[in-house]
Each structure stands twice: as C-alpha cells, then as structure tokens.
Length: 460
Image 1 (cartoon, one colour):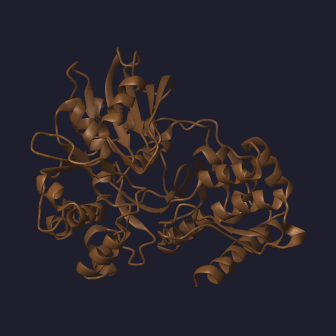
Image 2 (tube, helix red, strand yellow):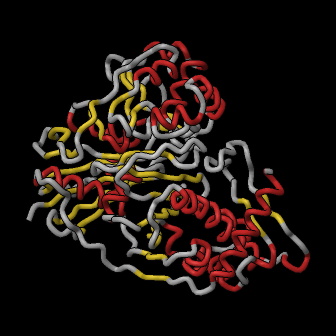
Image 3 (tube, one colour):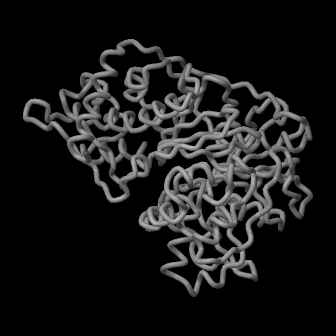
C-alpha cells in the first residue's frame, strides 16, 4: 500500500489528508488556519502547510496541492512576491473587469476566447487593476502564478500548473488548450510576464527535496470534482465560504451572459461552474444577528414554513459575483408584523442562500448539462434546515455525501494517479451518502418565485 497526501489550501485554512493510494481511505489528517482577508502573504500559506503536514508525511510517496482559484501571486526576477496576493474574493477590480470585457470585443468574444466573461474574482482583472493603480510594481513582475502554482513551486522549484486552475486565470483558453498572451498583454498594459507550464492531468510536477513525487495540482473546485468522482448527471453544489455549482462534461462552454465560467477540469474534460460570493456565511451572520448558535438557528429555520411567511432575503452581504452585483448589499423583502419572527428570518436566510445557488443549477441545465441529482457538500450542507429545503428548491433529488475534505481528497487522488502513471485516476468509492427526495415541489416553486420577485423589486 502506497500512501498519498492531498492538500486543500483554501481561503480560510490549509487542510491535509493522507490516504491509501488504492482505496482512498483516509488514515490521518492535519489542519492549520490562514489569516482572514481578501489579500494574503503567500508565506502564510507555506507556514500553514508546514504546520498542517507536521509529522504526517514521513511515509507518504506522493502529494498533490489544490488551492483557492484565481489568486494573483506576482513575482519579480528573484522570485520575491511583488505585492500581497489579491484573492478571488477581492472586488477592487470590478470596474477593470467591465473595461477589459469591452476592450476584448464584448462578452461573447471573451467567452469564445477564454471560456468566461471576466469578473472581479479572476486573475486577469486583478492584473489589469495592478497595471492601472500600481504601475511601478507591475513593471517589476516577471512571473504570475496562482496559489497552488506557488505552493508547488516551493515544493519542487518548478513553475508549473494544470489546465483546471489555468482556466480560471482569464488568459488561458479551455477550448484551445493554450495561453492567450494577447489577452494577458491587453490586461497588463502591454506586459507579458511568464506563465507556468501547463501539465497534463496525470503528469508529475517534480519531486520534493526528500524525493516525494508532487502531482500537477489544481484549483479547489476541480479538486472537489476529483474527490467526489462525479459522473454524467451529477451537479455539485458546494456551500462553503462561497457557493459553487459545477459539473464535469466533455465539451467546453462559452456563456456570454457571464453566469457560467467555462473552466477546464483536472481530468481532461471541462467544468462549467457558477459561483456566488455568499453561501455559508449568510447562515452564520443571520445566526449572529438573532443572537443564537448554529444549532439553535437550525431549529428555528426548521420551525418556519416554506416561504418564511412571505419573507425573502437577497443575501448579498459581501456584494455578489453571480449575478454581477459587486457593490450590492443584503436586502430583506416582505417584512410585516405578522412574519417578523426569528423562525421566519432564519428560514429566509436558508432559502435565500439556496435560491442564489439554484440559479446556477438552472443555468447549467439551460446549457444542456444533464441533471439527475445534486451532490451537496460544504459546511452548510450538514444543516438540517438546508437539507429540508434543498430538494424542494432545486427540484431534483439531493445526495449529501459524508462530511469530508473533498478538495484535499481530490488532490490526493490526483497524486495517486501521477504515482501510478495509469491512464485513468484510481477508483475511490464515495461512502456514507444520504439521499433526500423532493417531497413538496409546489413549495419549492413558491420559494423560487418569491425570491425572483424580490430580486426584480430591488435590482430590476
């Protein structure tokens, strides 16, 4: 039995799992926090990785790194970080995204070229912001990496990436399988810094000084897809810091509305994805407002009827990426004396969060993505109120896999794949799933209609 390790370097923390390379069974785990914020010193990721792996890797043969997508790590010719990394949740480049889209010929032209319409989260718009607001720093940049690229470089000394994470930069084309240096130069004021070499899915990035193999690595959403082993008819809804909706398909997408980001996946296919900025933190923020813990919040939400007595929450507490409302705030619509209860407010928070991601499910379905079931993961997936409402809001059966670090598991599965050198990744069973059926489709339609009416009332 060979042991492999997978790393999830997320916005909030580093998680590590060590797995049996044949079966995927987790034999040990580690974790370390990251500082909060929308910018980061990459050294904090390295420190967290060092802490989280302390004592875990002695008998590990291979390791894979998955990390938060889009973060801009700009290096100078000595390999020093030019400025703190701008993370996916930093919205300062919202205007740059709009301007860049226009310069590249409009939304359809962008979607055809890079698979997506640029938004503030993407690396390409952060480079545009830097070129405009920090030109002297931009002049020093010789290499641009993503968070997982930077960690892989620290492990191996190689500037490499994978097609999944590269597709989130906004200057690598999933359809063409190459960097679009013309897009990069347009964004970065004519500058064309070096970009990491894109590895094949099972290709190794190199080895650590101890001789441990390091796989190509990938972005967090691509890692989750590998960790879950999704197939045709599966749509994943992840309710973590952000909300993501994605599926693994065999053709690239080019959505000119900007709702769907047309990414590549980590296994040779494609990963159409919809992302919302507001997910699990909507529930924690509402619980704090009500002065209760999450367990009591859950009980309150379960006690309210579907539709929360006519109360609807547009949960844009941190602005929003999908729909593109970077400056929006949360809005409570339909508040009346007879529905002004803690139970209804809790229920409205749950339904508002789910309606936000359900729009992503609808968008994938409209693009021809097969939908037989939703796999619900992330911290908020364990909420009883979320599990009660989700099948009704999504309108299809919902499967809740056993809580696990699926991004890290996917990175470990990729490491096992690279170690074996096989044509396909190893088959790892997905255990402990709970199936939730649609019991009240009419209630779900009511909730969706109520949310849509509230959105139209506030945002047009």
